[in-house]
Every structure is written in C-alpha cells, then in structure tokens.
Image 1 (tube, rainbow, N blue to C red):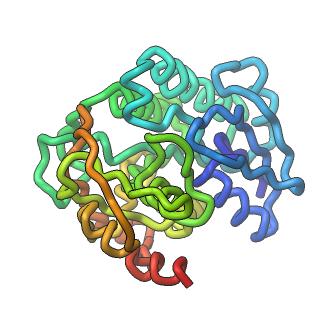
Image 2: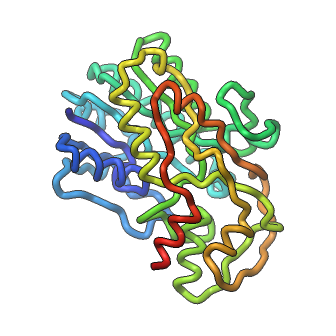
Image 3: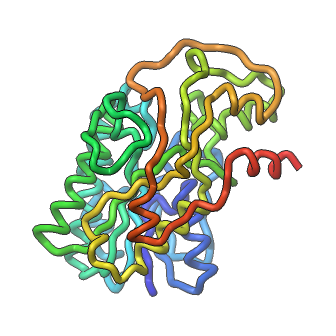
Amino acid sequence: MRALVTGGAGFIGGHIVDRLLDDGHEVVVVDNESADSNGNFHWRPEAENYLYDICDYETIKPLFAGVDWVFHLAAEARIQPSILNPTKAAHTNVAGTCNVLQAARAAGVKRVVYSSTSAAYGLANTPPLREDMPRDCLNPYSVTKCAGEDLCRMYNKLFLLPVIVFRYFNVYGERQPTRGQYAPVVGLFQRQKDNNEPMTIVGDGTQRRDFTYVKDVVEANLLAVKTSDTAAFGELFNIGTGKNYSILELVEMMGGECEYIAARPAESRISLANNSKARGLLKWTPKTDLENWIKRSKK
C-alpha cells in the first residue's frame, strides 16, 4: 500500500513511518519541522520526504495522488504554546486539517486516521473517560483539535471519506520530545536527569496521567487502516492504557532530585482512558506499561 504521513518526521509520526516501511509499504512524509520540543527530526531516506506545510493546500495536494492511507499527525501540539499563540494553533489544527481531508477526498484515499487528544475531556468529566462524554475544552489546543475531529466526522458523513479519529493519552517512548519547558513530561524528566538537573514538578505533582507507549499507538494506527468494520468509520477512539500514575509516582520511578514550579492554567487534573471501544471495534490492546518501560530504559 501507499501511505502518506503528515508530521511524519516527528515523534509519533516517525514511529508510524518506521513501521510502514518495515512492513514493506511505500511512504510519503510531509513535515515542516515546526515542533519546538523535537530535538531531532526523524527522516527515513527510504521514504519520499517533503519539507512542506499542511496549511499550503496547493503544494500538498499533488502528494495525495495514488495514496491509499493517510495518517494525519501534523499539528500545533502543546497546550501552553497554544495559549501564547491561539491564532497559530487554529491555522494549523483547523485550516491545515481541512486541507488534509480535502486533499484526501479529492484523491480518493481509502482511509484517513486523525490524531486528536485526550485534552478534549477537560475537567468536567469523571474518569475513566469515555468517548461519549461531553467535551470540555480548556485551551486553544484542545479547541482546535476538537474542531479537527468535527471536520473529520463531517467529511465522513457528508463526503463518505472513511475517517477514524484517535484521542491519545500522554504518549511516551523512544525519540520522545525533550526540548524546552513544555516538552511532554516523560521526555522532559529524561532530559533533566541526563543533564543532572532536578525534575520540575508542575503544581503539587498529584495530577495523574494515563501514559501510553508510542509503539502501542502505532499498532492502533495500523489496525485502523486495516479494519474492514465500517462501524469504525467516523468514530472516536480513546488510545490509552486504562491505568494512570501521578507525576510524583513518575519521579519516584525515574529516581533523582526534583523541585516544584507553579501550576499551569487550563490543564486537566486526571487523565484515564476507558479503552473498551478500541478493544472491541479495532481489536487493539496496549501491551507496554510505563513502569516496566522506565526500568528497561534505565538498563
């Protein structure tokens, strides 16, 4: 098959590209290297690589010709930066997503997988979080990613484009972003430990997160493009383990000095996925636990 991956030089996208190439598929990668927290972008020479912006429709449209699967991961993907620049988040996450969907529709793509976020649940819902719970968007990042979800579902319903939407829960793993103060927490702590710096705990550290291993996320994406169950089209799926850890527990697992910094606005307290829908419709099962991964990475 021929696949196109937006954000394919980034963290999750790069792992999807690896898996597709290793499985023998042709891969087109679109990435503009705008992710500030990525220290190194992951370009595989075996892929067709394009340093393009998804907001430029006329430039990206020709790349979709002959493509079977689209994995859309390109985004302005951090909460605090989106608060500093809501316009940029809206431009990329809404207009850019519409461009990807329209290009996929025009090319007759067989399947689109859209990467969204568990930040959609906010503070209003009691975990474990289910896909049928109301959205509670606390920041420009979650608002714009949910607008992307709505575009996906509209393209499925109105234009019959086979789209599947994933809400990821705190993805971690090899090559995770580590740069800057807003890098995902596992990568941030890893960098701070490597530099002999204290791990910075935001707020009191009792907030809990459902940490999901990147290769389990990759497996979900592959199952989504291969499923023949049309009941999955136009649907939302939580991609999380169904188990969470506090930030204090994460510090204890990693071991080392820590310090507390001020709490940040517009972030949820507890994330915990109910993943029964993905288990049932997509036959997806998370296989890696955070604690075991940290033990292995220490070795």
